[in-house]
Amino acid sequence: MRWLGIFLTACVVLAAAQAVATALCVLLIVGLVYGLFVAPRETLGLVGLILIAGAFQAYPLAFLAVSAMLVAISMIRRR
Image 1: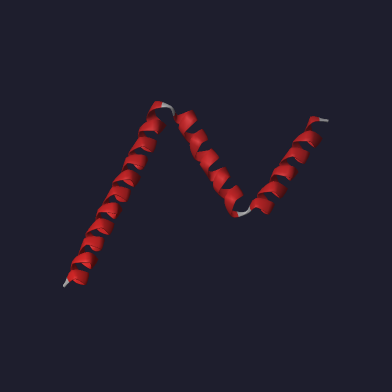
Image 2: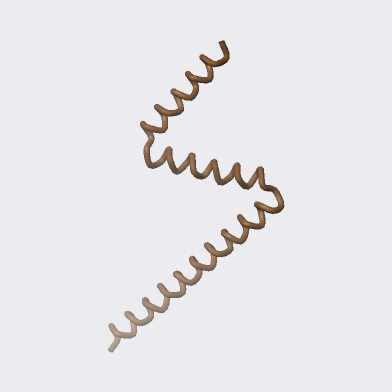
């Protein structure tokens, strides 16, 4: 019976952690929507920065290659 109590307690703790994580995600989404109305430029800049950081973390070599190509193209256009 002791193992059953430990197992049930662990399940309750995990359910509470999941509820907290869900509430934080909803709060983040509400904050982003509010930010879009209050300061859209900064909010979209933050979202773009997060996307760029995610791309760099997932595909570092491809991201560096694309960055190098963009720098080269911008240098060629200036001439």
